[in-house]
Structure formats: C-alpha cells, structure tokens
Amino acid sequence: MKMKEVCAATGLTERAVRFYVQEGLAAPDAQRRGGRTWLDFSPADVERLKAIATLRRAGFTVEELRAMIKAFPQAAPEAAFALRRRLRERLDAYERVCQSDPALAEGLEDYAAQLRGDVAREPLPAADRARSPLPWERWVEWGSMALAAWLGFRLYVPLYSPLGELLFSLRMNPVNTLLFLMLFPAVVLPICLALGSRFGKWLAGHLDF
Image 1 (cartoon, rainbow, N blue to C red):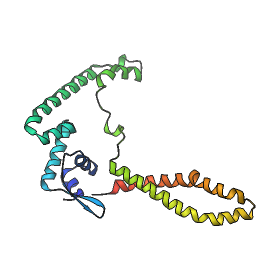
Image 2: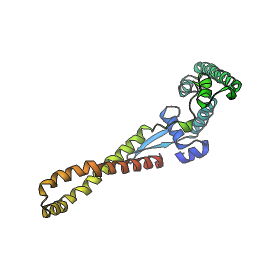
Image 3: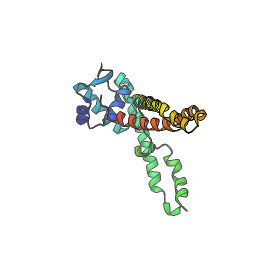
Image 4: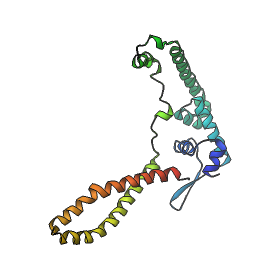
C-alpha cells in the first residue's frame, strides 16, 4: 500500500506515519527508485500503525512503544505502570486546578502563579508548539535555496556587460565592478534564498513517498 492509502486506512496524517517510521515503530519495505525512497506498506504494517496510534493516544511514549516492540512480555508491564503513574499525577493536578478559585487572584499573572506548580509538567498544546522539520525536509529546503541562488547568479551575470556599457557611457567605469559585485550579495542573493526557502517548504509539504 502507498502512503495515501495507508493514511486513509489508519486515519493518520502523512506526517504522523513518516514520524513513526523514522522512530522505528513501523518498518515498511523501502525501495530506492529514481533517486527517491518509496515506502510500501503491508497489511501487517497498517495494523502496526493502528496499534501505535491507539497506544500513543493512551499516553505511551515513543521510547516505551519501542521497548514493547522489541520485547513485549518484559517491557509492557513496566510501561503500563509508568503510564498509570503519569495519569495519576495528571489527575491529581487536575483536581488541584479544579479546586483553585480565580476570584481570589488579583489578575491573570497572579492566577497563573497559583497554577504554575500544578501544571509545570504538562506540555503545551500541540497547536502552540512549533513543529520541528524532519531531516529530509531540511535537505529539500536547503537544496531549493542553493538552486535558487545558482539560478539567480546565472541570470545576474549576463547583466554585467550591458550594465558596464551604461556606466562607461556615464563615465562611471571605475565604480562598475565594485557596484556589480556588491549588488548581488546585498540584494539579489537574499531574494533568491527567501524564494528558494519558500519553494522548498512548499515542495516538502507536497512530497509523497
């Protein structure tokens, strides 16, 4: 099965599937064709992804799942005990938050100070956290930036002759070379890098393998 079929069958996003594969929680067949890696998922891989998603929703960490995959009878009891302990801690913190009274606080900061100790271990919501790009996404972005810089330079160099003739006609020939050399890194190169970065991020978001 291809990536889109797996996403439809599991209800997972493409990014989540790639993350589980990258972390070693699923091991689909990988083939190199045309300079790209194509992933082929078997029915067993799909069932593994469904199980991983369920256990992640339950609260198991990636490290605990990796240990259970390697040795389930030995690792599962310990992982389940750790999960119950974390859930108990969250429940205790939830009860303390429920007992807090915002009417006793003088303002937002004072109310937050009352809750800080109870929620210190809680992670920020996923929407508040910046996503870290996968390694291959960075390579796509950097490659696009390098390509854009190279194309910009190739398009910029032919301007040397007409620009030189113009400055020579204005008796500015001594300034010609210096001005030409300074203009590329100061103006043209930043524009090329910015465009290359945006294109690389767009391309990485639409690649399917």
